[in-house]
Amino acid sequence: MNISEVSRRSGLAASTLRFYDEKGLIQSIGRHAQQRVFGEEVLDRLALIALGRAAGFSLQEIGTMLQADGARPRVDRGMLRAKADELDRNIRQLKAVRDGLRHAAECPESSHLDCPVFRRLMQAASVGEFAALPAMVARRD
Image (tube, rainbow, N blue to C red; front, side):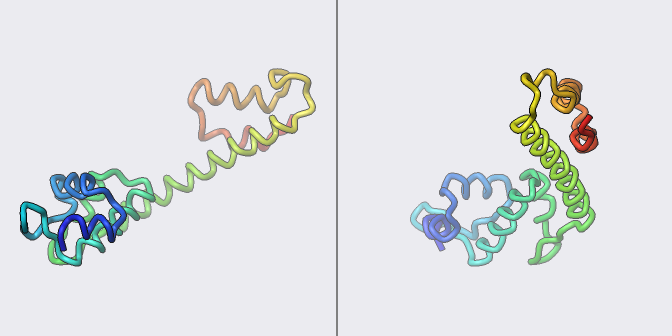
């Protein structure tokens, strides 16, 4: 199928497909009328790339996982576990930030700067101690 058909079926711009081809994430199987031609399997690879991007993998990491010894990509399960652990940390941090924002929105103090919870959040943010945010928000003194 030509690049226009792949673009239509995948929802990706032709320029993105050309970029992925140049980076080795997908491979065209030839050209027809000066357009790249791809096999049907490219749609599965594009779906894997989209899934990897949604999970937060870089294109380089995705490229490493898609380097196949045969026709099938090999997915490093260790990389998947590490990314899942990273996502868990991010989720905990985002929940703490969310809880802090909700607290600040409902805080009875006349100024947020008078609120001990808000002060702890500011301090953590100023020194990049985001891992400590969940415990800081949980303390309401």
